[in-house]
Image 1 (tube, rainbow, N blue to C red):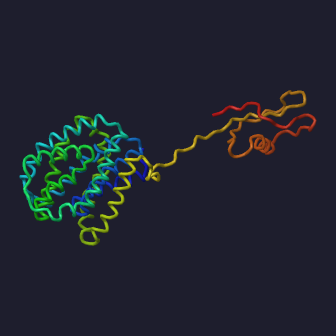
Image 2: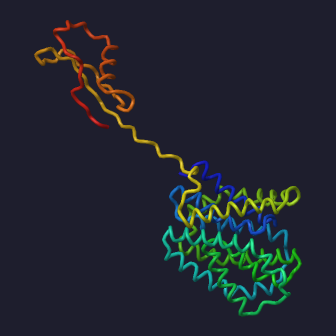
Image 3: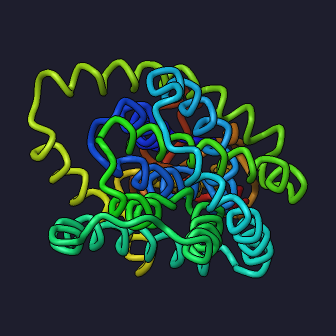
Length: 330
């Protein structure tokens, strides 16, 4: 069962999908997968559970994005990328089957950290680059790389940025082309994810719980565009991306607050005390009583309890101190 804190972390991650689809917090969607892997992993789910849960949600977010940027794209980019995307998704699906859960955590965390480093360096990388058109070979190479990274972590953003930025497109056309490419990549992955059991009825049910957060995130992204500094917001996103990536790579529990402490087993004894006369013959049998040893000394509690009972008064010479005969551990 997923705890409230884990639901909260997954909800934040899904909200980021909607916010990024509204064009706010560039690259924000890359943080979604690491956060969901951490949230669902705290409940014992493998990384593939988070990947499978997110894909239908990403496709839902693409619908909102396409509506806002309809026909504001360069179709030739998709044509160049698609052959490589198909091959990359097939390679990625085969790779997922060969990685254990800890290894996949490392891959996803490494991609998150690599994304962060790229985002920090991209302005310097492309500042003085001349406008250019991609070749067919570049399209296939970038398509393969995008298909693989998107299959592992829904994280083809940096690669698509490297492919599209040198073309020096207007911002609106750049955004529309990016959304079109991501939409097609996600739908290419869909049948492979179903075939390999990455998308299941359980992941669909889980995703349905968070679906409403996609349009909420889109509206929130539009509002954030008008009210707060994107640079300040993105700075906090980068910090969170780094922490999530390091958590997945190193296994060091930076989010230990998410895991509720397991309940300690209740150790107890069932005690059946009796009163004995000096000859060892039983005089009074007292009803059984459960005593928790951690709370007090067993004999002291037994004696106190016996003193509180309404027993027949016996001469001191006729009985000894009450003592337990049977101790049965539960």
